[in-house]
Length: 557
Image 1: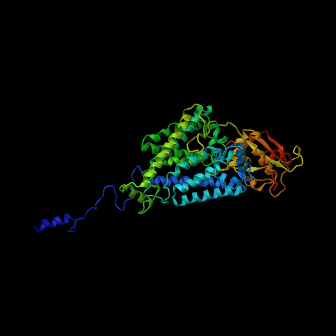
Image 2 (image 1 turned 180 degrees about the vertical axis):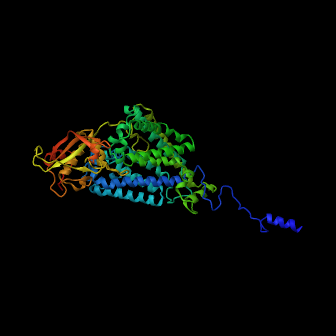
Image 3 (image 1 turned 135 degrees about the horizontal axis):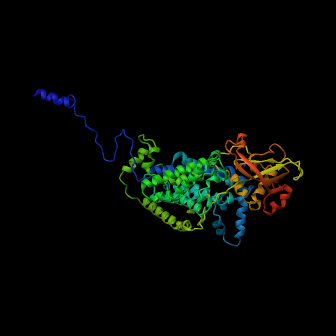
């Protein structure tokens, strides 16, 4: 019997005790394996959404801090104090609520004698709160509401400087962000406040409307979108081209047609993927994010494309976003995995209230979406508009028409006593980013935004009578106003006496041909003078014009 027993011991491992496999609990992984997240929850999605949204708020408030005093401050090109007084005058004899509802902003309740300080304080507070959220990944409804109210207040006194689609879009995106968070708790993973499916679908509904609205406005608008030729012009004539746009413009015609067809597919077909189940929704999110990255690379469209990425993040659940987080024990990803495996705690009173709030949000968004959907179905579709004063649910669209030629307003000054003196030397001002000097490389600034440069693009295909602020700009340049000059890249009269005359010249600009004569000379642009944009003006001649608009004459205290 000894031999068979010895043989049996050898087969069992040389007489040692049997090696038992560790007991596996269903739904749990061995300690050495990274957690495998389940689908259908959005803990990590909320973290990514909040940090992305806070980053966009930070950029927007940074732009406001650097430029608002010069644009809408006490001595700005379009002073917000004067704008609010005009609203008061318009509603004279009516209740204060009428003025507030026309332009809802907390500035109504503050002392306008310190308007520059008010604008700076709003921007600095917004920068501080958004920076905190970026760094900590923690937010609550109070912090997100503060960000929304602050930017909402700026947008409603910003006038034409804040009259673009991304302002509406940031406010709608930020409004939904309020309901991503617990009311008071500051935690990356607030255990009793899982991410609401209603808010997730609110973001998906937002990206659907953004993309479909952009696609429909194109096929209903400029004929070049239907002829597949719009991209022949877009890179050259977009508001603020970047260096990559110069090279993309040189692409062959068939490549531009492929770009246009791809654009139509992404904006008109892909948005419907969001309703076709988890896998197709993820594909939708990937395509939309990649599309926005391409647009970021090819132009300086403010923070618009960065902002459009934010609602696309809602297409991904925790299982899809897990790769963004480390797998170390005790890390965020590991804690989410444990939350997924926990039994649902008993429903508390606060949870019931929160559920009611989320349902109310869903009903509100659905109700406010009715005119937006009707607008999408209307052949006379309007874009970048709102049907409610809070700008919660808006219409969107971009580049419904494409300008086929690029024109620029070039501001020039001279120290000559007479503006019509043939010997007068006119020197050009250079803006931060818009084309001017033919040899200056196009800028690359996205997601930052120069509001004055952007408005100069619009002014170039309108008249100065439609843009009276440009004469205000001319007056401030005549006085070498330091605040206004902070918006300018090059002042030819720096360190010298101010110019005696300022004029605006109208030019047609085109990209130089890659490998051509002008490119060999270092020129990114070629230009041709079209004529005067506004006549030569001096401070004396502008005095009555300024007084009629209650603008202080530059140089006077």
